[in-house]
Figure 1 (cartoon, rainbow, N blue to C red):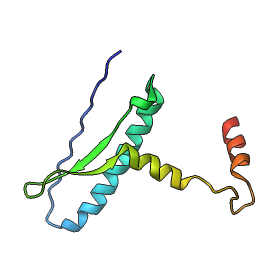
Figure 2 (figure 1 turned 120 degrees about the horizontal axis):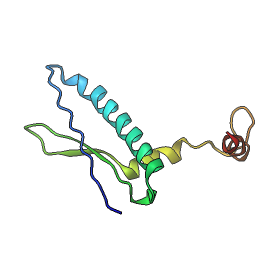
Figure 3 (figure 1 turned 180 degrees about the vertical axis):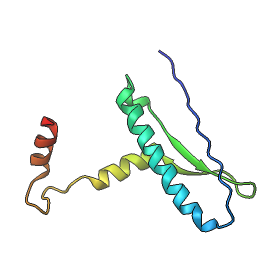
Length: 99
């Protein structure tokens, strides 16, 4: 068993710096998708890790996505004990588990 690192690099060129936020969101979405896929395929999911960075010629590299952020975001998105439609988290888990 070995560990493998995959690197994807995206370079964009545009005059409007306001587009940075949209590119950043797309990179985060792609990172989350890759992380989820790697988790599903990994024999030992705890060892899967991801980081997404941004930089340019004038500022140092800045991390914009890490494994901890994905877990924190996922936990925040979990349903509370009582959903708006009246289903509990346990009811939802039972239905989803049967799919």
